[in-house]
Amino acid sequence: MRTCVELKGSVSVAHNPSFSPKWARIHGHDYVITVGICREGYTDVVVDAAEAGDKFRALLASIDGKYLASPLENPPLEPSGVYTVPCGQPGVSGECLAKYIAELMGASWVRVCESGLGSPCFYFER
Picture 1 (cartoon, rainbow, N blue to C red):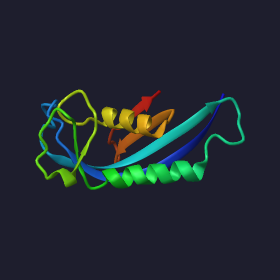
Picture 2 (picture 1 turned 120 degrees about the vertical axis):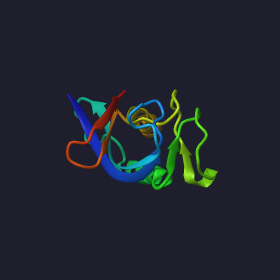
Picture 3 (picture 1 turned 90 degrees about the horizontal axis):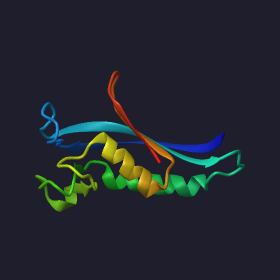
Picture 4 (picture 1 turned 135 degrees about the horizontal axis):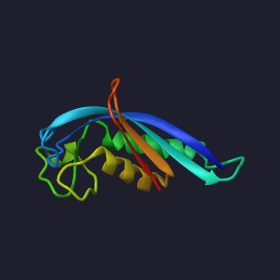
């Protein structure tokens, strides 16, 4: 059994997943991102929800409206319009973004979902 706190937010970003033959072009997504911070067993307080919420909102604000770039690509924009996500391939995937957010937030799991019915979600669990 675990006790969890979930935080949910959204961002609009662009990326160029050049590793994908079908999607290798600059395009954008509206992502809904959910972060789960969990502790084993039952606990009355998992985390300071206000502090975690502030940290999550600040992270989303720093990403929102940016071009997401991996260190292995040359972004097409000025540095102020780029947010670098440490991925091991040219281009940022949803999986890589979920892992990165989990690490920054100290989260147990993260789900990054493209908006729209039938759109994929990417999930990372630590």
